[in-house]
Image (tube, rainbow, N blue to C red):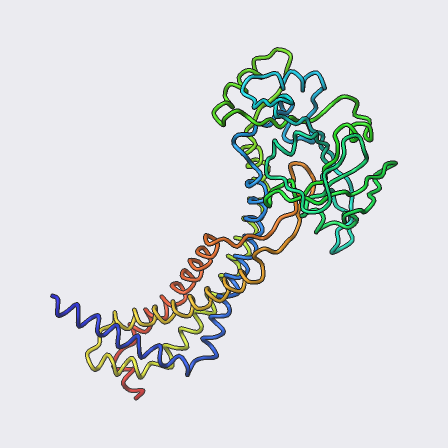
Amino acid sequence: MRCSLLNWLSQVGSVTRMSLQTLSERRGAAAAAAFGIAGVVGVFVAVLSIAEGFRRALLVSGNPGVALVMRAGSDSEMMSFLSGAETRWILDAPGLTRTEQGPLASCQLFTVINLPKRSTGTDANVPLRGVDAAAFDVHGDVRILAGRRFIPGRNEIIVGRGAAHEFAGLDLDAILQVGRYQWTVVGLFEAGGGLPESEIWTDAVVLQAAYQRGNSFQSVYARLETPEAFAVFERHLERDPRLIVKVLRQTDYYAEQSTTVYRLITGLGSLIAALMATGAVFGALNTMYSAVATRTREIATLRALGFGASPIVISILIESLCLALAGGVFGGSVAYVVFDGYRAATINWQSFSQVAFTFDVTPRLLLQGILWATLIGLIGGLFPAIRAARIPLARALREL
């Protein structure tokens, strides 16, 4: 039994080595098949890296120790409304981190303004957020890169680096005209690659006056004593008869915000890759059928010398997989070099505003691309391998 297995393995190794050594004689067809598969993997990884980058921009912004309070029934901050009195009641709730200055919470306004994109010049909705001084401690990862923070009460803004990169007129010291008001860009900030980097921040009181909002807000971001304190905080607000609000962890809110765009891009990317993969399969089939046709005499000779059909099938499958994997690795590598870290912006359908993000070619995406290539190689090599094994020996020998 062991001798039979060793003999079979020896046959597989010999036939496979012979197959790979003759690839140079079929380099044109082999290269076409490999590059076709590389295109499939490259497009698949590139498109899905958009979805990964968008989701990462939102998810890295989330902190389970931060709660978000909005009007009940609101899908986003844009649709929410909280009066000044309601925000004070929210800030009195138990479970909040408190300092000498008071509860560590920020009452915020959210609106969008039209600005031209640097790349195309077309207008897009850019988030303009009104915050107070506590916002920098609540969000925690906001850091000034250039300039300074805005001074409360002044028409000054600070701009996230993603927004500054994507939209015109947001350079340091620039004057931004919005309606009847002008704001001066006094600082550029980063937020660990998260969602705030797509936004413009200003003093909430100034924004209230500019948009005639009175003493009203749209959301409250509150830092909890511990992530476990969320239940106490939520229960207190939902039982308060003066309030009609919903309370979310910041992580859960951003996860909801990313769902629509992530599913859309993932679905379209998978569909495009599937269509391209169909063409790549036919290319692989054509290449391997040609290989079988040109090796009919060789296969007949091997069969006559006592080689079994299964080693021949395995050798053709291995050849097809080698071509597919070479194409997959090449396509994934090109996608990583070209797209990983590429900056772009797309609309967040929950808030109808632009989100600046970077493409994120993750190891998981690269692995998925390699699996696509492997599947194409298996399908492309299976039927030619079966055909090779079924060639009648007498007919093949007559061609010698």
